[in-house]
Length: 504
Ligand SMILES: C[S@@+](CC[C@H](N)C(=O)[O-])C[C@H]1O[C@@H](n2cnc3c(N)ncnc32)[C@H](O)[C@@H]1O
Image (cartoon, rainbow, N blue to C red; front, side, top):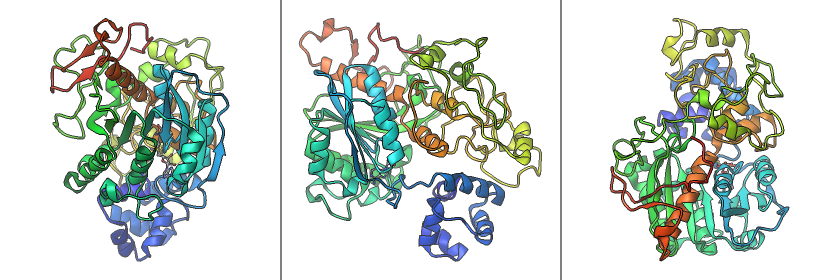
């Protein structure tokens, strides 16, 4: 894990860590963003404060230096300067038009398109490499590479045109200072990224919005952050509902939980998507009623898609090696693998990190957690560092460092190396035809940061189901609507029309 993730994980303030190490907070901020090297003496002091192995911290920092986090809520010289990449094709008539804020690679809006009935017409992100990927995969979308805080609302509205759905997850720095909607104004330097989301929402007034965020949003400041966000979104004129979703419950081969807030301009009750897969992991959110789970009546659901179901057809590659074609003797064995290959011209991004001899020795001994390593091989680290994934369960949550074993559990179940970017993309449910642009390090961050497209697809179908439920003849529609789920009294929608071709 890199410096910033470690500090946040330990609930330490930047200024306190900086004081402990004897540097100005600004300097620590640069190290955290990967914009400057941490000097060796400071590295040792930092490792001591954070309780980690200096070598592991050094490795994580060099990965970060290769791909600085300019886009994780910070504005730096690496930000796009408001470049607009025009759409390559006009949006088809009749589809609901989606604007993706903080779009990254566009996993969320790509999922909406996969659901059918939606077309992505715009996206904005701070980083040019994100916009390059986003526009490559969204032919009907105008991509804007800019700091949302510095891009005028009028220009955004003009560039993207009419919008039916806004989707996106603002990086959560500074949510606590959210002010009531009525006091928000464009151009106010105090505006947080969540407030910019709300300002765009209030300006474009789409029928629906989807606001995605980390589960930590629920507990920050005793829930004050979440309440402030909900109040802001409600203040913008929306009927709002929220839940905690686990991607594995929707066919993603990954245990990845997120908070999702959905709002309707017209007061349409949102029917949350019913899980399509059985996944019994404990929720980070605890036993809250808002955690969406398979109910007692969902006994026939298939088990969650496992890591082997997702990547078992990819050719083996040793550390430092690459395979650029599927192996003829390894055809897809699961519906998930077959779905991932649809439309792909060939195999890309299946290149393994070249690990040092020391790291390879650690990897050879790696097991389910750091405690599987023989004593003395590494001196410290989180339980999940240097850990091997289990082929027979969904993957652990992918992070933006998943090609480095010192970070969260990311070693291949049977091969001695970290996951390849292609395997990471599969774990996130990006099909092999999805094209990533940018440097290798950028691509890994784009993958690790994305909302899995299959989650976007489930949410998009639920929007369609919610609108269909209001039609007078909805009982005859192909979408089957359930008004109440068996476990939590949550209104839900079964998400898939019979002909959807959804993965198992
Ligand atoms: C979690 S990622 C988004 C992932 C995306 N929803 C997906 O599904 O692929 C957050 C994104 O916010 C972008 N971002 C951060 N600060 C921003 C800002 N001030 N203006 C615009 N985009 C910003 C980052 O560059 C990053 O790509």
